[in-house]
Length: 218
Ligand SMILES: [Zn+2]
Image (tube, rainbow, N blue to C red; front, top):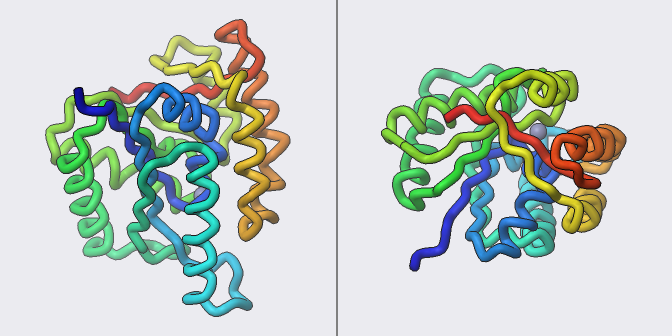
């Protein structure tokens, strides 16, 4: 039988770990194939370094971290970041995502939530949901929040459709993976308290120690 495939779309190379690192590791231990797709690999967040060098380093770093959590394939879409995207760039991104969905036929697709306060994150949401529609994709679609803990609380409290995954056994490796993102240190360290907080908060739902919850879109 063909391995069950899951695709996770994130804006930056650490979003998938912050939002779903425990779930990725858990699924990979269950024998599922995990594909991580990153929209922006650019070095714009470290302006004093040469962009090309930053991209090379970041790809190397991401590969190492993805190995830790069991991602089987990492794809960098190289979409320009930190500004309003042109319509043509958006359409090109939609086409790339649509092709990936058609090629890999995932059982589940994960991407950013439309409620995220980061515009690059919302861009991923728009592109992926549009691509899902255009591809006629019938599998499951879930969204995650990186920069909006209030929405996570909202998903848990209200009867919105959701998927909560018990990550008690993989939470440690998630934290290790976050720490390993040295290039994103300033950014990821700020988020560590909320990673802890969310894992405990969502765990209440499952009666476990740590969990990750996602909103079900389809
Ligand atoms: Zn991000």
